[in-house]
Image 1 (cartoon, rainbow, N blue to C red):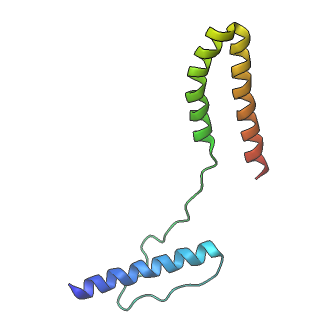
Image 2 (image 1 turned 90 degrees about the horizontal axis):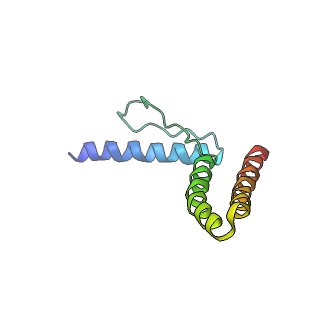
Image 3 (image 1 turned 135 degrees about the vertical axis):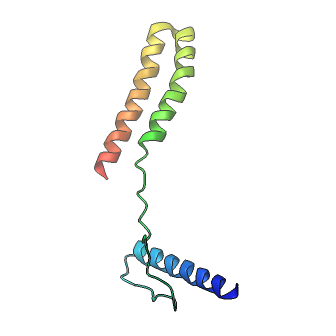
Length: 100
């Protein structure tokens, strides 16, 4: 049992070192622990989201109550102003993502 845990611990340490090296841009390749097989599935670099989904859901979540408030308080002009603001925020977010 002890040797199994040592092998698992060594494999975890090797993967962590490889991931840290990959993220920091160093070409370090960790040595394989004694008796360990090479990675069947090497760790993949996770793709970072661009924030599209949270902005869309946030716009819808804010848009529904904002529509109700705007229509009851200011009528069609309030409705137009509320949704124009939401559109401006989404367009600004889209241009911000485009520049990256």
